Length: 384
Image (cartoon, rainbow, N blue to C red):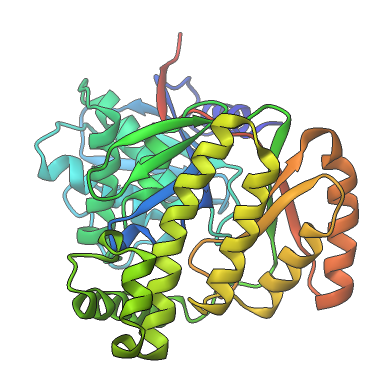
């Protein structure tokens, strides 16, 4: 049973009635543009055809939310007036954060019953948390009979992360989940927040390669990279590394020192790779897209130092397969996933070859997900 139908069935079984609304928000994969977002740069994510769904029905007369999680096989009841209760389970943190944001901005969300579930792998770097924020915002706005532009929903999700969850994330995950388009990646200018859909040719598929290596060191190393980028920008005399050129970085190499030089070189070259990838996709030049993905991985491995042995092995094995245009690590690094652009006709053979080769080399059992670029978050009014 697909996750949408599973959520609807669970709602009817648990609450003995049909839901009023069904909200959906997708996960995302970043095709290229890694660690550029907090440098005011460019990223090219795509929403994927794996999502979180919430079926809901308002329940007038009290202030309680009854929420069932299919994925965690759990249920909770909490008050709309005690959303920051520290004794509630962690899986409910992101829905509670979205409801908190709606309250803070005076959206009259009533008490409700809900069932949540989906098929985004948790902890794999595919932004399941952003999807939960967006899907809860969608249902809350529907229950409050309110409208909001998709960009504002995305920025609300970012505020949930910053102010309720306590994670200083960028804007990419929520914008991709809210604003994705079918068969398109989304070029995001992280300074202006301007978005441009970029077609992904149908003869190519996105394959997400979960290494099975859970991400470690991310928090401390992420903070260190941000500090290094800010320090490099100060040496270069620019507001952010987005404003520097490779010529600027090379000219300041001695003043930057080895570490800051390599961090700056990655960010500046990665921004250019994003723009070059957009041009190549529009031209249908998938071979060049693949070259850019491979170059991105090398830069992340050598200059930004956020890869690991498992990600390197996965990218190397994937890049060696017939029909693979290119592969690279995706996400913050130190574990998690790689992404490959693969000729659609070669996907089955690609998956059959990569999984055992990776297991033989690392001893880990990978998970491979064949995806297409999907539409952003939405709400559906269910018929009685």
